[in-house]
Amino acid sequence: MLYRVEATPETVHWGYFDASLRPVQIVKSGDIIAMEAITHHAGDAPRLMMDEKVERIFQGVPIEDRNPGVHIMTGPIYVEGAKAGDMLQVEFLWMDVRNAYGSNYSAPWGYLYEETNRRERVTIYRADAANMFARAIYAYDYPDQYSYPGKIVTESACRHDVACRGISVPLAPHLGTAGVAPDVAGRVSTIPPGAHGGNIDNWRIGAGARMFYPVFVDGALFSVGDPHISQGDGELNGTAIEASLNVGVRVHVRKDFYFPTPLLETAQEWVVHGFDEDLNGAMRTTALDTLRFLTDIKRLSQGDAYSLASVACNFGVTQVVDGRKGMHAIIPKALFREDLLDLG
Image (cartoon, rainbow, N blue to C red; front, side):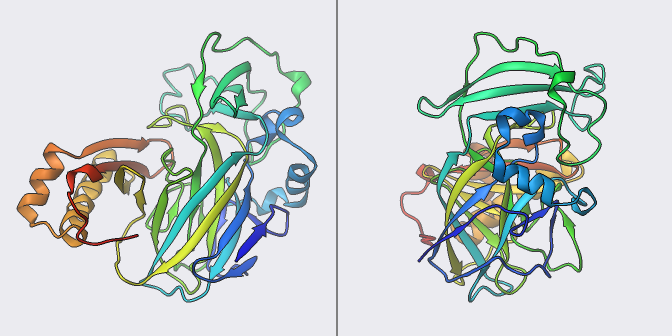
C-alpha cells in the first residue's frame, strides 16, 4: 500500500520526538509512504525557499511550540506490529529536491565559531538536480541574531555578496534527522542524536540506503525532518545545505535480529554509529558496537572482529556540532564472501 503524508501544521511536530504523539498515519509492515520533509532554514531565503505550503507551517506552528529542538519533523508514522525490542527497517526509495534552493548557515554552534571571529554567515545555494550539483548564488552576514527556530530574515536588510565563485558542490540529498520515538515521558529534543536515531547528520542516509532503528514504543512512531542536499563529514560550521525534500520510504518490522543503535546499510557498506558529548567517548562507543556487529551479526570471534576493525574498517567523524557528537564506522561488504545473516 502507498500512503502520502504531506507536511502541514497538523502533520508536523517542530523540535521534538514524543512517544505520546498521535500518529498522522497508520501503516503495515511493507507499506510505502511518500512524505514531505521541510527545512527549518527556509526563512534564510524566504523568497526562494518558501512557497505557500511552507509558509502555512511557519505561520501555523507557534514559535513557543518549536522546542526543545529546532527541526520540523513530519509524522509520526505508526507501523502495525512494531514492539519494543524489534527493529524498524526503513528503506529510503527516493529523495527528490522539493525546490531548487538551500541554505548553509555558519552558526554560533559551529565548531570554529570563535576562531572565525564569531561571524554568522549564510550562503544560499541553487541546486541543479538534473546534473547533481549545487552552486552558491550569494551570501550575507546574518542580521541581528538567530533567536528562534524558523526565523524569517528580512532580505532587504541583507547585502548579497558573491560566494564560492567557480565551485560546484556534488548533490547528496539525505535526511539529517529521522528516527523513532524514545520511551521517555514528554518531549525529546531533535538536536542530539541517540539510540532512537534523531539528528545523526550522516550524508549517506539517502536514496537507496536502509536504516535499522531499535524500536522503543508500540508502532515505532517514525518521523522525518532536517532535509539536506549536501553535507561533508563533520558538518563543521553547524549546518549542511539545508533544503526541503520529497522523500519515499518503505517500512518493515524486523523481529529476527536486534542492534542497540541506528545501523545504516548502503549498496557497498554497513555503517555503525556512536554518540557521546565527548568525541573520544563517541569513538569508543562506535568501536565497541563495531565489534558487536562483527561478532553478533557476522558471527566472527572477538579476536577476528578486533583485527578486522583495525585493518579494514574506516572510522570517521559524522558531526561535531549537535551537542552529542557523532562517529561512524564503515564496514565494507566486500570483506564478506557471503552474509551469514541475511538482513534483506
